[in-house]
Image (cartoon, rainbow, N blue to C red):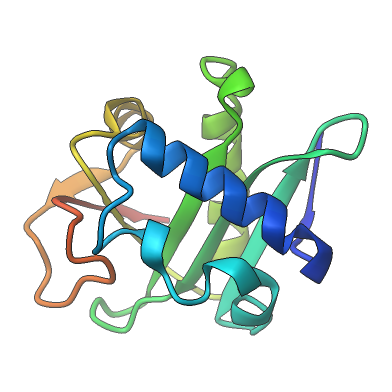
Length: 157
């Protein structure tokens, strides 16, 4: 398995993975990434120094997951961990923990001191991973990226 920055040719695969996962957890609703305007063109949205997206490839070069970050101006020194999605065949393998660790290192390299994230009660396995990775739950910030999200976390990097 290896990480690399997203390319234009990955857009459809990542968009499909995100939509499939959200639908499986009954989160194919407005106010989630399912309806993000830029979901089908991630390579354009994440090609900046303050926003990066990485895909995870298996040994055969197939994209099996992705994770990214973007500046989160509402909390000083914070980046938002965004769109951690992984093919269901990797569930329970520890890969989610590895992906978080990988993107946190990229956040630190970019100068961020904190990692913020938004999630939903329906994503219980993800919440478990976030807590085990050192994230602390906080109250809903005044601004959130996805209005349907109902759980919010932060971690000092």
